[in-house]
Amino acid sequence: MGVEAIWSARAKAFWRESTPYLRYMAQSGVPLVAAMLFFAGAGYYTSFIHRVPPDFPYMLVGTLVLLPFICWSPMRTWLGEADIVFLMPRENEMGRYFKRSFRYNLIPGSILAAVVFLVYSLLYVQGPSHLPWYLMLVIVILLKVLNAAGAWRERRLAWTYSRRGVRLLRWAVTTVGLAAWLQTAPWKAAALTAAAAVLMTLLYRRLDSYRVPWLALIREEARTKRRYSVFFSAFTDVPSDSAQVSARWYLVWMIRWLAYRRDHAFVYLYAHTLLRTELGGIVIRLSALGIFSGWLAAYSGLWSGWGAAGVFLLFIWLTGLQLGSLTQSHRHSVWRHVYPLPEQSRLQAVLRVDRTASLVCAAVLWLPLLLLLPQQGYFPAAGAAAVLGAIYIVLIRPKGLKRKFTADIDD
Image (cartoon, rainbow, N blue to C red; front, side, top):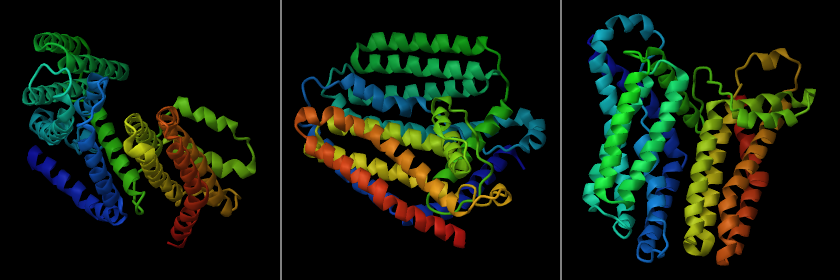
């Protein structure tokens, strides 16, 4: 087979395997909630653009909203470990293979960045803009293409610390350049962008790199597949490979509070499972998105504060949806049958870890409401959100987890 035919066959096989899980996700009600949130947000945004405060931070909000969609450049290559043996000898042909991957990721990413900018453009035209919105749209797509090209050069770098450092530098440079395009004169922003592109190109050429970074691409593809598995496992049982373990030193220190006792064995296991696998990464990213969304809703006093309360409860539900994957962790582990630990303690450990993680996420998500709503006289909305969130986490959620855990055991 030609390398392009191999790429097409692997892409079709992945989506053919994922289609049943997408159906389960649709049956769970997540698309309905997303649609309700979209229409509610569209209605509020429409009314907000007609009464924008005079001191609204156009440049700051525009940079924060657009930056992730411009800089984040994932790449699906469908590579596996066996390709080190079977495809590496055909490395001279792999240029066409990776061009397919580059287009596959760049086109939807550019469309998404363009859509986000078009939504933001309703505010952009009211701020200190120096370019027509359609020219700024071209700039956003250009920045997206430059970042995608830079991300590919980063993948080729030979050393891990070089990749991380240059990626951080690329995000920082893009932040400055995007802010310049949103607020300063076009010729200044163009000069800054051109100088940054030239300097980053020279930096990429100076660093040691591979022609094809096989191991880095294989690891990235494995991480992406694990993320799909963790996401789909919130809705149904998903067979998956072993989970990737991350150090996350900024979180695992909390586990040291657990005493080394027999009744803490499963608690220790599930706490590490949450904090050191991809599940913890998803929960962290969801919480960060919830903080940003809650801050925007609370800052604008959405629906007299009740809109911010709704955003808070929505993200509690979304993080809880992912935390529910803990009930399926270690279902088929041999070690829990080897050690003399009561099976019932596993359920209690899941409930305890889930409750603690949910309360921590809720406390973090509630901070924007606590800091912004009382200043506007909307403290009842902030208080009601906290009470409803606590009721859901402490009283309602454990019952659902017990039913799911029992159903998994029966299966």
